[in-house]
Structures are given as structure tokens and as C-alpha cells.
Length: 579
Image (cartoon, rainbow, N blue to C red; front, top):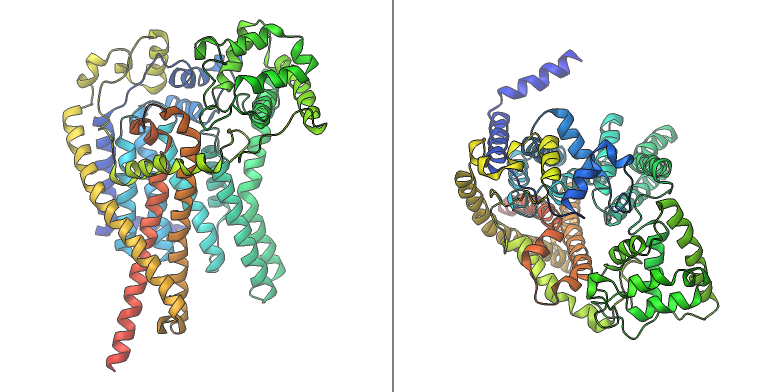
């Protein structure tokens, strides 16, 4: 034990690690002089997160109590308990995320140079300093660092299975907790869960193959199996606990009831009802709502609710004239329930819509209601035709311009917040230990130095714009080279099996992250299309597409590792040829 501690302390004498520590201090300093901002008037977004972080969230219950997930409010509670300011805590987690990547690369390759490049790349990722994605006091600001940590774990899981590396129980438990926390930052965490499950299935197949081949005993096989499924077990325990807490305080066994619960199920049923008026912009046309009303005797008992939905002020008072856009039925439904005096409690509304849903679904089964034939990406989004899906390419292209070329990235050290809701601004100030959230005129009197910070941030942006283009070209080059090599069976495929194995694994990982980035960007385009009817707002698109820079970052790093292995192979073959 003592030897292990002394060994770790001796690393502090290594110039390599001294440099890393220096970079961490620079990153913490930059985060402090950058600061952050808070729009106190955003009742359903930023302000809601502050209210969720308070103990009164479980006492003063209303129709907004289960709109969104709880990871970011818990993060705010952690900031409050730590007695550190929000900027510093957020910067610390960015440093931790970069260190997890450094640790991953050193374990895999022991190439200190590439590990350092990976560390620096994620440590100063522009997302952290962009005004909407990084310095706004909202949940999107923590998505990137926690996604980095989650994928570092997923990757180590896969590579440890392939390379016969051991994992420690403590580390697996920590990473499992991080994954579950990341999953519940937003309501769309299912894509992250799909990545975890896919990696577990892959590892399971590898372990089964190796067990059959006699690489390890039955005891070791089951110990590896337990560690492998630990993240899913922890996720399930946290999910059950989360739902049980909500059932205790709010009366419903659900995570949130905007997209989940019986209200969420009702919205999904509306999306399924065939309507000639459904478009890629209008997911819940008024006639589909009336079709549900007509087949549900329970719904018909609440005519005023139907009227409040159709004549919603969200869309000019008439959903037939101004159809409900995108996922806004979830918001329209929530306010309509209150306006129609149907809302009494989460439990009562859940019970009511459980009956309505059973009647609507029975109408589907009996053929009274016809199902939509358009393709749905997931049940919580509206369907699209083939031509409508093709049109998503425009948004995807813009999304990549943001992620790679940093289009519409703005340096985030600005007094952009407001105190329109002074009560909420004061609560945010106390939760984050930041006085200027109630008076932005004193922002520069604190440690914040916007002029200096923005100079450095814009410099970082300019570097990453060039670096990202180079990395994309590198990804294309190494994937193309490996593909052609396999097709034409070049000599390096036959020889040096160990190194070729790593070339294959690194190249496959690069390709996997590029494909995952494509799927993620496609899903974001699908969801956000209805927002851009008057043209694509890059700032908003970047805001939704926040995790894409992380996925591309991992592709870049593994492209470098692939290139390094290919260079070593070619150097070996040249030496053999000269002999």
C-alpha cells in the first residue's frame, strides 16, 4: 500500500506530470476569469433547474414539478454543499474528464505524447467556453464533461475485454454512478444507454469466446461478468430509487411526466394517429387530437380540456389555424390541464390519462383509429416521410459546421444574464456562491475578467477550428487506408499480428465514433427541425448538438492512435526491406 502511494507521489517529480498539473491550474484560472451567466426569466428552463435544486421542490408541488430530470439540480446542490463557486466546480469536472481520457490512452497505448494531446484537447474543448453551451447556468453546460467521462469508461470496458486487462471494482462502481448521472442530465439519455448496452453485448461475446477457448476459468469468467453488468445494475437501482422517490412525493412511479408517465404515453399515442395534416414540423395536428377525443369516453367528459388544448395560447388560440409544432404538445397539454381546472395532482392526472390511453389504444386495436405510416425515429417524436428525412441533411450539415468549424461560437465571458425574476436570481446566487448573479454590474469587481478571458477564448476557438479540420482529414485518411489495405490484402495485414490488431481496434473505434456522431447529429436534426422554420439558427442548433464535439473528439484521438500504429508498421517493413 505504502509503495503504491510512494510510486504515485514520485510521478509528481516527472516533468510530464508537472506540465499536466500546470495545465490544470491554467484551466481552472481560465474558468474563474470567464465566469457564467443566468437568465432568471426562463421559467421552464434555467429557473426551473434552480427551483428543482431546493428542498421545497418536494414540498410546494405543482404542474411543473416533474417536467425535467434531476441530475443538474443535484449538481447545483453539490456546488452549494462544496462551498465553492459554480465556475470552479464546473472547471474541476472538466479537468477530471480530461484526466479520464489521459488515463485511458496511457493504459491503452502508453504513448505519452498522444495521451497529452488528448488531455489538452478535451481540457480546453471550446464547448466549455461558448456562451450558450458552456457558461450559461443550465444543464447543457455539464453534458460534455460527463459524456467524456462516460465514454472513457465504455471504451476501457471494451478494450479491457479485448486486451485481457483487469478492472477494479471501485473504479467500475464510480464510473457506473457517473454514467447514471449523465443519463439523467436530460430526458434523451436513451442514446447513451444504447451505447452502454451495445458495449456490454460486445464484451460479453468476447468473454464467452475466450472462456470457450480456455483463456480463463469459470470463476474468473463470472467475476468479469459481474463487473461487466455492474453499470446496468447501478443504473437500474438508481432508476428504481428515483421513481420510488417521485412516487412517494408526487404519487407517480415515473422519472418525469412530460415525455414519460401516462401524459407522455398520451402524447406518443397522438403521434401515432394517422393524419394528413402531420408534417415534419407539426407532429400533433389538431385533427389527431380530436380523433383521440372522439374514441375516448373518458376524454369526452372533459370537453373544456379538449378546448384548452385546441385553443391554446401557445399557438395563437387555434391549433387548426396554427398547428402545434414539434414536441410542444407536451407543454400545451400541461398548461391546458391547469387552465381547464383538471389538474389536481400528478397522481390524479396520471390516473385519468391511463384510462384515456387504454381507450385510445383499444381503438387502434379495433381499427377505429388508423396508425400513422410515416417513420418514427423514436415514439416520443413525430413521424417523417422519406422526402422529409432527406431534408434533414441541411440541418446536419449546419450541425457539423458548428461542431467542426465552430460556426456561431461566441466567447462566453459576458454579463448576458438578467434579474427579471430577482427571487430566482437570488436563489441562483446563493446556490452557486456567486454574488454577481443579482447584479451584473459588479461582475468585473469579482475574479471575472471578461476582456482577458474572451481574448484567450477566441484564441482557443481559432486553434480548434484549424485543428478540427486537420483531424477530420486524418480520420478520413486512416479509415480509407485501412479499408483499402484489407480489400487488397497488403502485407501488413499478414504480419506483425499484435500491432495489426491494435491498428484494427483503433481504426474501428474511430469509425464507430464517426458513425455515432452521424446518428447523434441525425437525431438532433430530426428533433430540432421544427425550430428552424424561419432559417437555421446556428446558436440554437449548437446548443442542442452539444455532445457531438465530444464524439468527434474521441474519433480524432483514435485516428491519431491509428496513424501512430500505421507509421510504426510501415517503419518496421521498410527496415525489413532494407535488410
